[in-house]
Image (cartoon, rainbow, N blue to C red; front, top):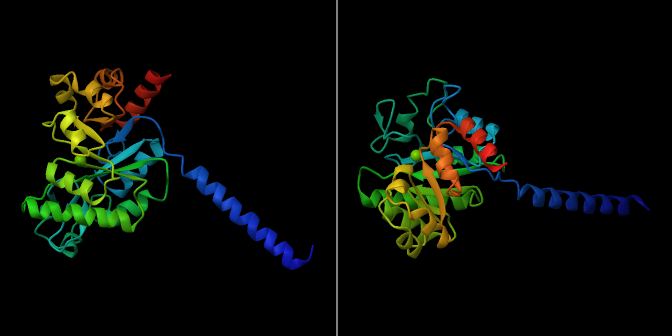
Length: 266
Ligand code: MG
């Protein structure tokens, strides 16, 4: 074989290897039911929704890690739970103004873009994107839904991202823009058949909502909806929900949840 042929063979071999590796990596999302609520922050005292808490949730082996997204005054999607970042109101501040504050671990407020990019460096833990309701009104929430779908599309993050929202119209806007998006409703006031009609992928209700409506989990499953529950922090509540075959538990105690899930499933 001459050198030119050898180079061609090597090139084909490398291309095949990359294709095989990509195929294998495409199927590696973890199948347990644990979703870290605002990342895994508690045990290590990391700031909630920080990149450090994202990394910890991934290292623990969570099926998903949840984070909260707000829109700044100058249309930047940023990751934080509260409407303010260390006293600075997010909706009425520019991104640059928010950079004047830091988390205690030295991190700045992450943009949703940075957060997704960091999460997309792996393919084991899904990224559960909570789009927060704007306190500046319905239009602003709708606009933040538009920007979120644009961002996820631009980053090719569809495989990683599942959306959760308290705002029903904002959630429906995401479904309208991307009918294949996996969108769950959070507020607990819509019955499974209505959510199914409106194109939702699942319900993500407070665990007490399922107790008050004891037929909903079964009804939702019969309709093909996926069930997540928040915020499930005790072994008893975890087992109660696992016994009803819920797909996901969102928890501040992801290490405990993984232990309880493994015991329950084996
Ligand atoms: Mg949240």
